[in-house]
Image 1 (tube, helix red, strand yellow):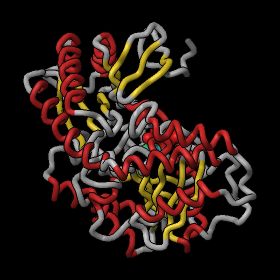
Image 2 (cartoon, rainbow, N blue to C red):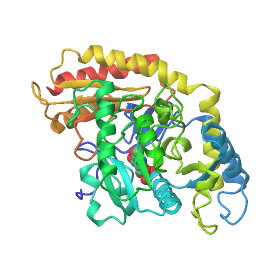
Image 3 (tube, rainbow, N blue to C red):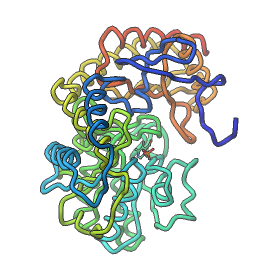
Image 4 (tube, rainbow, N blue to C red):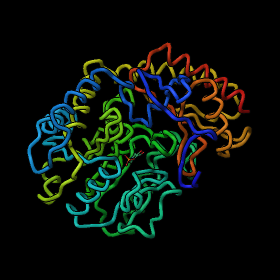
Length: 416
Ligand code: PLP
């Protein structure tokens, strides 16, 4: 296997089909999918409503051209604008989260006439030249090569770094002081880009209100706030439809990016911004495969299902139970430092027992053991491979949550 091919498991699994919260491998073995693809299967595998919409659309037309109007795209843009919480919102579709963030950076730098960007340590924003250039997670971030000048600030992670151990208020104050210090030594940045809950970074979140406090400082200087909702959007965090809403005191972000779950596996990404900012896009700025009829049909059916069945509420209820259950079963395990998260975005941080040191070996062992037990989970990326990541489809049932927690408990016990 080439080094750059990042497959999970020593003996890689070949997935052949799925249904609900389960997938099957080539040998007919069934697994409970606690990673929802890779947070892409937002509602359920093979959801009949999405399958029907996609096959009917395929029978009409798959893709015409960005040069013509296409009704499914207009309808999905209108629905997303409606639920965005951003006044006078406009939506531009891309094909991935990376391309969405690239577009957001393009907009912010054009709007502000600055190529300086503030970003969070330990963040992940994608793998294009500019998205990787604002990514703080060491493994992905060759910033010296980036076309952008990126300055990193503290706040995304609570358990490491100079402010670990501070209570919420002091943590926020320390991060705001750090932000002000960085701003005091640079030309005016275009924007701050941040994930409300860091995804690849191990499902870590700052205290509620951190980005509202940042926003006060940024707004005074006209600096934009880009919320990267690629993992956190559409109700995944349970309490809120968007991750940024935990930080909403000083209003919505200027730009929101999304991808992953909206197409239930179909490749949809996009940017939401108020018209004044979106108008910085050149009229000829197109994404050939952004907004194709076939992906938009999937997005419309998927978003409709999510809203009609209140899957955000389900994420809050079932996710709350799952976090409690995982905390209870791991309380006596010395290698589990913390179970954290919100809704159905749950991180389990592993350390070498009796230390604060990350334990990537244990994370890989737990993944293998869980797989043997019939459960698929994720782990953090880059240098943060010691956090397990749990993000099932938002339709998870209580029985499935309990079954998954029991398998994970066994996997943790057998790995230490
Ligand atoms: N932003 C965040 C927060 C992500 O987690 C990811 C992917 O994991 C991306 C952007 C990049 O998205 P994509 O892989 O669709 O390009």
